[in-house]
Length: 213
Image (tube, rainbow, N blue to C red; front, side, top):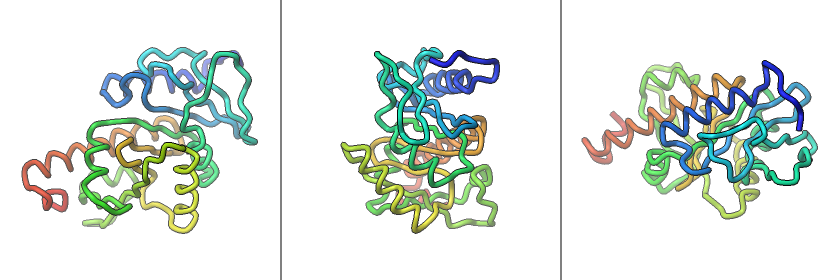
């Protein structure tokens, strides 16, 4: 495995994974984080590793042609195909984060269609939405057992219609974001999770209409 340098992006992924784990968004071995390298390859968390206890050795390098850096005892995240598709669709993206929160799964069931309307909160500015009283939706995808099928559906839909915000939901599964830096991707996760918590709380107070207030 490649030795690390002071700027090794795996170090930032380790710190972020630990933070998300402490928030309850990456319990057990759930979730996956990746970061791109200058040559177009990317590091991604290995499958079956606790995100609260990651080491530099708990990452797999994926090259632009899809090949993995060989390792006898490591397998890349089962959702590597989704990261690959997002990096292809959005060449400016340098990081892709996927977490499993209770709120993300709850809001994914607030609608039966493939788009979740988001409330016009101030937090949307952090996701690039600057309109006053914006009408913004988050795309939802079915949680197929075969991850490659999810990746294909993401590619097909986003090739036709770009999402309004750099995030997507997989129903009963979790949220994925992509961004131009690891720091920005971390911010995006925190922002969307705040919005999800608001939506869950609003529904508890106002019912179905609460998320439009």
